[in-house]
Length: 317
Length: 309
Image: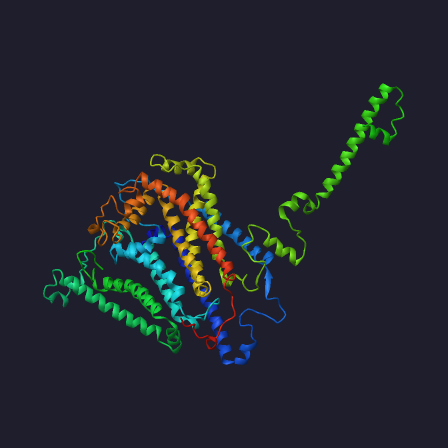
């Protein structure tokens, strides 16, 4: 156990935000879900008791008839904003006084940094480079992440949970977002920052970053692995390309089927599914199938050492 | 003068015309100064109630009494506060609901603009002096190091708060009707935040920024159709000297032109674009009915039939 290495990684000034993320993201996930569960208990209570549902103010916060429903912005909101500004300023001041922004040697194109890392918020994308070619990891995936995020309000047809925390009423949406945000985005950033060392190799926390480490791992393409390698003509195009296209087709069908099963799992899910238009359904399937491609390729690489599934003269996936 | 003399009835010593004139002038001056002094004292006393002065009234236009109406007007007639409504839902001020992340992001943006403008006074976006300017800032400029540290940490913090803000908005379903489009604007702002931070990364012109931007922009060469390493790029005639990466860097490598481009995107173009989208974002929060909640919970049995096309 190389504690010094671990300490160096955790306290590198530019890694402090990730160290902060390690605490902030779990905290706020808990903070939000705790309120979601509290609201869920209220919802269950109101559903069991229609008489109560008619008269209840429908929040977990205390309320008595006669209390004003609204408060003045000045002072009740502005004082909070002022306080927040002061707290943030103090945090920022202390942080800036105690920790210096990193400054390396002058830029030198002849001396490559190893590891040379993107800023931490892009390390998820850089980590994706392990599993995808740059055109996928650096261009197509980020574009689809942005477009997919923008599409969320237009494909989520569930009218419940508008303006309050809830888990029970939006299980699929919340689990999908947490999977995308925490499992794929934040954890990949953490891996890229803390785990990946020289040569972008995997170093467990506490393992020394060995600049001479070599790993003799042979990544093979799917068509080169038995039993597919016995397909006649698999070594040459176009059979290789067509085989890859067929495998991708099978993946799309399987993933689409799995996602369909998930979004029609419960009676409530089926009710929401019935509200969706064909266009909404197709768009949602497209983004979810693409999102699922990442963990699938990660597993293929980590478990079976498979590099590409689909090999063509122009691009590889 | 004559008026004052007449009023005071003249001084008893005044006998000769010449002496009379001299003495009465002196006395009149003394009287005048007494009157002025009296007036000054009265005016200073009046300053104990500054809100009654013309200056104050011209600035704030409304009375700030201890009344509900004054409180409302204080918010509504103030250019900096007018984005707020006069009154809000009693539960909407709860930190547990909003996490305050949107407001903190905006505050950090203001901090970044402020520190960024100060940094601009000491920075030349040229290969020769950019790095030296940073050294100068760190070692010679008063509070230069603090300034640079604050700018960098506020930028990192802003990325975190913007992401947490998005997380909260998702968990509370605040993107649902009628706020769908504001979510789209928010996603654009998230992208702009990342781009602002990324373009700033190159500016110190050190190894860290140089290689981060090299790694980042190398991905652009793999853009499908538009990059010389990307799918179908070469087939469309893309080379290192005409593809999308060339456009970003102003060259085929990260060099002086890339530094200048990063500087202009970082200090001029992106802040203007981001500010514009922020204005739209805040405006839409109000126009879509204020912040989304905490709204009363809705039950499954109350779902209305969807509108058919």
